[in-house]
Length: 182
Image (cartoon, rainbow, N blue to C red; front, side, top):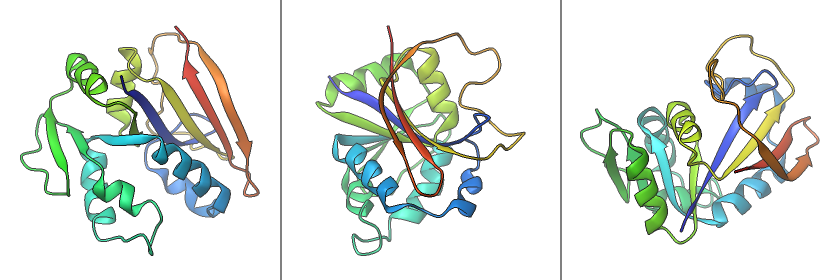
């Protein structure tokens, strides 16, 4: 059975919406190594509609020379959770339909490795609420936003996590990998 591995850029105050807060910090090459390790453990991608609509044009024309993650992003099977998207033309993309915990469980059962999720705030929040996320890979930037969509919105159920990995980078970013407990 596959595991859902979520990758988020996040502020100290928990904001994951609009990761433009990352621009001032540069990209430490070791962050790329950590993300490549995460992608390398996955055989599929799961995205919400808004993230899919941002990623498809951004990634579809990239090559390995442009970004080492391009082959994974472009060649992997992509599953898009959306009640409104009519077509998904990015290579190897299929529309799952409206969010359904049952559909996500079925997807986990059909993939024999990790399922990579990036961004997709609404989808990730729903999967966390339904106990479907296995590991959160949080890249914590040393900044607060004050406003914006947070990973754990007000009213989210209490949850416990076990730290699996922690790594700091020269740009002040901290990578924390938390496995859901329970």
